[in-house]
Image (cartoon, rainbow, N blue to C red):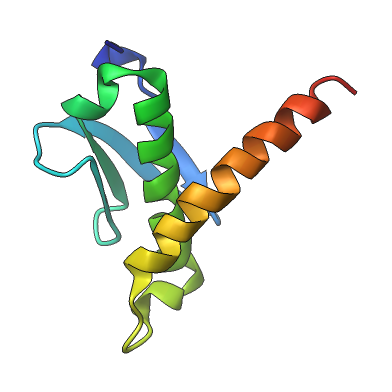
Length: 102
């Protein structure tokens, strides 16, 4: 279990700073534009991998909000966010491991 005090306190996405808070909640995470806040559940602290994927998912939401795409009418954001999370994060991990060896 990761201690809440070890979770980063903020992150910058596209020039906007989002606070990161650990909270009791039913979802794994939540990104709120109006408060520039990413919340993660205590359940996400069970492992580094759960926290990492939860934060990546919420960062995707934040990036859509900052870019303006998240505000488009008739835009179903969640399927796109999930595709980014499940396709790009593993690809990035593989590429990042190779880049660290350069």
